[in-house]
Image (tube, rainbow, N blue to C red):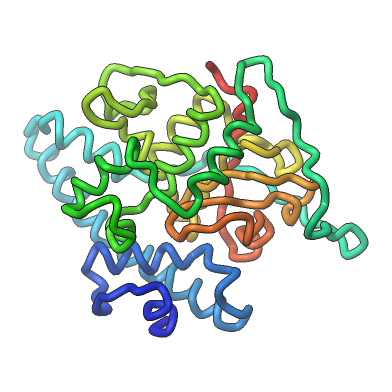
Length: 295
């Protein structure tokens, strides 16, 4: 992992309590293209350990809120919003994998078979093309807010490691594909999905809240077979009910896990991994058919 940090220009000390270090380790959860199979097993074990360690910190916060409620102290609005972010998801429908038999392995250059029009106005090819344009960059229109919040300059690539950008990137792509902003009672509510006018909604840039919004707006696809180019997917690395990552399917060559090619931020990749990597890593997967979402 030290060599990976040098290659990426990441300079930080291993500190389990450091949020930036936690974010860096968790970003390796989808680095299937950067490590051999044996090393990736070790990486995933470490990622899941860090995820568990992060959960301990969340549990401490939850216990603080529990004590407040036991004392009949009314939490503030900010505390209520934070509490909503800390609560895990259980007993929710997931997207079942569909592993290809050896006789049906996808070809690397197979043709994308996805649809190009949807009744709700979603243009999945426009979403894909946006992802292609920005997969290895940061659109300042949508990323300056997060950079300034992290105290750095969005034009500096070193700044990009200061926040997890996976959900922000996928949200931008869905917006480019024609998905309309939605405004709930508050920018922290699950019903909201928007960027601006003052701040982005929690569902725009947070992987867990992104899931909570789109599982309601589009529903969770029952099977990988139902997913196509332009659909979004979420991953729970450890099955703890806390969503860790979000990506966009930008190439679909068939009905199996290894036909669904992913483009993502944090770590930035364009179609170097597929959903087969996610299922093979033991992730719990949630996929959303965006062409069927409320718009």
